[in-house]
Amino acid sequence: MYQTVYGGKYAAPAPINLKPEVLIIGGGVVGITIARELAREGMQVVIAENGESLGGGIRHLHFFYDRPTDVQQWLDDMIAAVESAGNIIVHKGAQLKRLDGHLGCFQALIRTRDGGETVLSPSVLVLATGCITRPSAAMNGGDRVIGLSEMEKLLAGSRDVSLAWKGQPVETVTYLLDRTNDDIKIDTVNAVKQSLILQEKGCRVAVVARDLKVSASGMERLYRRAREKGVLFFKYDEPPVLSPTDDRVSVELQDMTILRKEERDTVSLLSDLVVTGETFAADPIAEELCRVMKLRPGTNGMLMDDNPQLQRVLSNRRGIFLAGACRFPQIVTESLSEAHAVVQEVTALLHPGVYAPANPVAEVDPRKCAVCYTCVRLCPHAAIGMEKHGERNVYAAPAVENDGTLWGAARIEPVACFGCGICVAECPARAITLYQ
Amino acid sequence: MSIFDPKIVAFCCEQSGVPAAEMAKTLKLKMPDHLELVPVPCSGRIETLYLLKALESGADGVVVFACYEENCRYLHGNVRLKGRVGYAKQIMAKIGLEGERLEIFHVATNSGVKFTEILMQKVDQLRQLGPNPAK
Image (cartoon, rainbow over all chains, first blue to last red; front, side):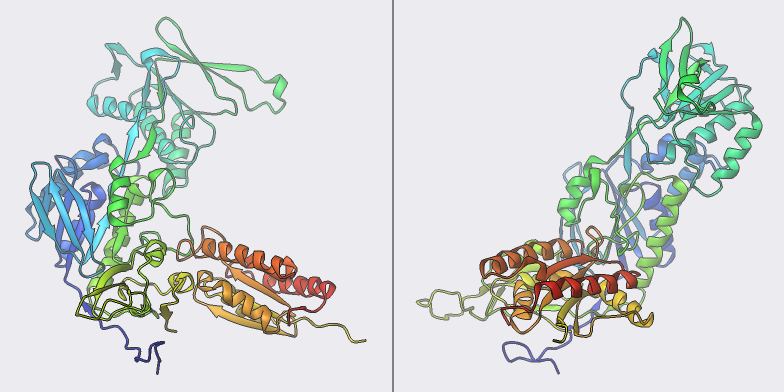
């Protein structure tokens, strides 16, 4: 039997009931996939979308690299299914402004743009805000240098006609990759996918990249097909030089097939269009959401944790899950598999209907607590809050008699506690005990 | 004269140090004779007092096996530990104890061999330093 410091007995925390209600922040492709599947499991789902319509960042994508479906058609079908489903509520133009509570009894305040406020009490939250793309810094080459998403739009607009840019036919296209994103594979995937479409239209395509990243499922096959169809691939070490000629752009790069550096010739590719990668950035709203939801932001505002001890879709708080491009820019197929992972995790968590804290959890002796907020600041899981407590603590002024005043003390929420013991070691008053 | 056999107290994080110690045990690797393993849920659980008490009550050296930084399951437990070990070292310097008697090592779950290598090196180091004068 556990014996607490102040003589009481340690009682295992009571299990809490979980309602099958989920709040999803972000109505992009990940958000609506999760909503659809959870609704199919019989859960009540609310989507809070910041924009005026569902869809999110996938709106600038028109072709999948791994299946022939038209993206926008597929997306519209999904949105129609979500909006007609009985147990999915969609709030558009809505932002999460406050979040209190913990797993099983979150209190979320949602404010819509017209000023309406809704208080929801979901059991679980899913954050899927996605990322945004920005055109990268202007390159020498005039208006014949465009971004990948602009090219995507151009291709979608001329499905059955030949390609034209500002009224002039386009015959040669050069992709210049890895100038902005050196470690993200989306650019390679999109460039190889688009080059195959261009090749079918009779254009000549060259892809100039520092490193081709084909680490997505089916990408090596796609790359091989592009080589077979006649797409030219060039590698560079030093960035290629762009110089505009009267009606074209010349991309000059060194011939890397020659090993000795001084013997290398310059190859110049004359092209009608040069397509470059775009910069990815975290959605600016994610920073504020991290503060509201007490999540730990990662590098550059992205929410990815490079931590092998944490599973991919879990966050630092129990009951809040992360999915999709808000973690880091990723291709749609990967985002969807993350969405499925979240659905599995949420279903496994909510299906039993109760949650019993399994870990050894920490407990505060309210009589010893000096209300210094050290534990509140240090808890990595935002499990500690302050509350008024009936018993007077030892730091209260001696002159004040116990007249029924409620004294402040820290309280560790057993459901949210992971049992790491950081607060126990840091508490200056030694008021916290971790039961093992 | 018999060779001095130092006593080591090793605090092990349950996410990394404990599995590494178990692995070393399964591989039957050579371990120091006088070794006491103290499992803790996270290296952030270790208080400054634990480290100093260990030295006070007879340990010649204290080692802490924590996760690699940025790899803590509880996000920043090992960073908190680093601060406390720094503080404990300050106190040790004031009372005249060598700083080598207290050290953090970062291990992963699969570093059983590294675990014993570190401990054997520590034994050699402590042999040169001699017994803990604060005993």
